[in-house]
Length: 505
Image (cartoon, rainbow, N blue to C red; front, side, top):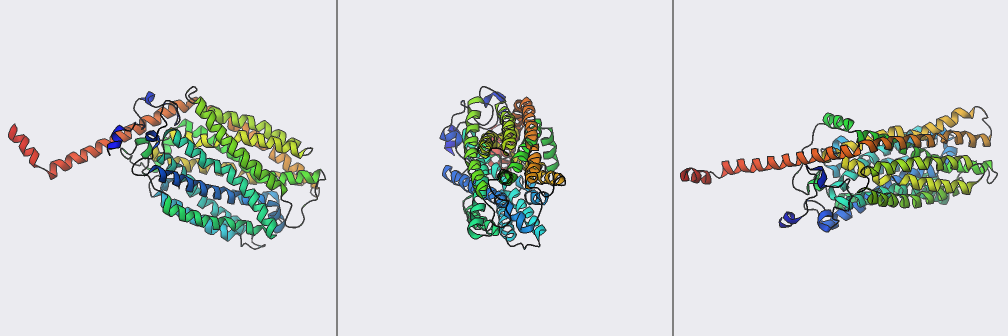
């Protein structure tokens, strides 16, 4: 306990100028003391916890995009059109702010393992059962994705928190890319796409054991108060009202939704789109028998992994350099990433009919620019929302961005493609063109997302200060209540000193 007396106080303060903007700053020393995990959790255990959470996040996105890596084989197996294929990607924050977060993640991971394994045994005549099991997979994923970032936020402060969040979110593009590669490799090796869905559950079993034995459950807001007190939770209605009044949260959530729309649609359809482009150019015949040519899944998966790593670390580095100089740097970086990636994706789609290498080049540039945002977006939510409402904020943001973003966009792109099919239903060239016209919606949504982040930049400084003030008030109230309880206990349990005071009077 003595070490806590000399530890630099990094909790939120009533004075807005005591802590620099964001959770990264050169003014805040990145020493062991300032970045030490709160309460009794050791620094080593906190790092191990982040590693486990990153591993499960990797499996999460590997499984999610395994389907995209073998989509052509699935379409041939079930005989389904583009719009129906898109349903495979379409289909707990309140609990996370109030109950045992570790237990919720464990239950969610169990649901994910069981439903993922079950989806691999669906018969050819039962496509809608596959859709249902994939929807249940999403339920398990959501319980984990909502809570894991808040645990990391409660284990670290300052630059350490931003760095750990960056490591966590870097496994989104890495896992997505490995999902394409793993799905295509296993399908090609076994001749059956369903085996691609049976590897992740086995790896998930290991993740479940690691989650049970190695993940701590720190008090909510522990990093913001350095273990000096805990904040009381409020009702769900109060949480939602608070979040809807938080303009930075609302606008950034809309930006995240636009980003999810673009990444979800491109991630799901790009390998299929490029395969059709090569059929149009006469570079390969149409796929009529399983397993289909998986070269595009390999290439796109590798591009996604590399650009994701480069983009996340580049975005984090740029943010660290600019935050002290530009108060609203984070949303501006996100806006630039979205607005500059949109022309790259537009050019990539347009040139796919003439040059596959040039298309891959612009896809790589666009994905790098888009990946600038991943870690920054998580950090924005952590410092504009008070600790006891972060899991609710994560849940609402994830629900909106999945419902209107990456869950719905694959189906919408497929539906537009199917609607255009009637103009030339038996032409392989038109199969490519109709999907091309559908995907062109993505750059438009990307520009819209950039505008949403520009709106976020107008309010983020004010909202961050408001979150600091509210968190500081709640923390000091908790300390006062603790002191009052101790005073009452001293008066009732040890009356002798009171009698002595009366006698001296």
